[in-house]
Length: 309
Length: 302
Image (cartoon, rainbow over all chains, first blue to last red):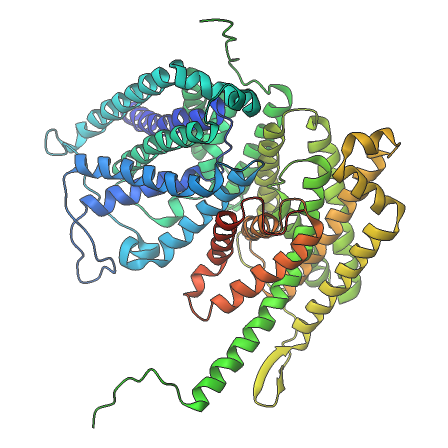
């Protein structure tokens, strides 16, 4: 039975990342806003949830706020905080032509990383938080909680999939695709491009924040070094191999990545190479990304061309 | 007797404050010189090939690590090691361009940018594999800090960094203004189709620009090693600060970044006096946000 537990845990992780990837697809796949700071919204969600739900600080803690609210409020707060931050970041950048958005989001994620380490009154510094409350934890025994949690996360993923799928099919989504193809055409059709971009950015960021909250529940701890560049790149990678504007492909890509990543941890390596494994993994990641973009720029599943609907 | 805190500082305290501000401005000039070298290649590539090269910081890390390899591991003379390290990073830059970027330049810009992300992850992996996860240092001798009266300035090696930075600005300026290839570069970056119909050889031009990219990035890496430490993550941190400089300078404006580099450098190093030092890189980001809000097209854009 152990391997089933392992698979369920992996699938939960895959589903959490899947939510981020589906949300990211709205930014990159539909609107072609290249966000290089996905991890920032993920981290903001996770930390907001933690701060809202965790216990008040003990003597040895350096944080000041632990509000002990219910997990539901924590998730709502996580989504709201991510949305507000998205608005603030989008305000100076989304109206600009060129690569400003990519650059500012990349830099912003680094800043969030520094903030998580330095603002110890809020985030408990490099130590982070432990034993983060999980919703419905009292309902079933700890052994079955993994399964319950998996179905919860899967539920959120399905809701995200259909909700964002609905948004994408609506006229709103068509405008987003239009922006991707040509901003000038959209402008001349009377669409306010920057406002559409802002809405898409905020909506997808809210889902990333919720996913961050789920991640905090899943790990039951948050530390600043869990939220590194690799998260951003994993999500980007999933969207690239899954195919742009294609939520099914993106979720599939994410599950493939998470499983591949987790299973490589079990490859037996000589102990002298164990230290080098993360470096080797990075090399493989990078090379795969380059190769897929070079030879399969459309991703595994191509976007269906909608002629008329 | 109770001591009341007073807002008025004594004359002595003011002198100490001013002295430390002067010292940190000088540190900022050192940082700015390195940043300038680091950003030059990034901007030239953005200008010539039209994409933001996220992996640029890794080139700087390659320069720093090859210096460490030549100077500390192989035990070469400092100057020879530096020349070798610059050569290695120039060749690495050219190789990266030919293998990874050249074949996909005809794709959409976004694809190229994401590829540069992949290149960055890959190079970062290579650097960590070869250099190990530990922090290294070039282990240079420590020089005494020069003093002017009672004001502590900076040490000899830091001054050398400034000199190298200023000399390379002058060389780059002369290259852009006087040589045929420099003129060709300016022509392509201001009007690409016109320059191409006028017979600019894009192939040899991009080879040269990427070599120059590698040389400046490698030099920046060596200077970073002179004033600080080498860590596997240094590339990513450099990328972030470099992008701040590039945005502030107006993306793609070679002369704008010359001013922007020193503004960012001085702000970061003087800011340490007023903010926790963990936020030093974050100050660079604050400058871009303020800059973009005030002047959306970049502060020194053309």
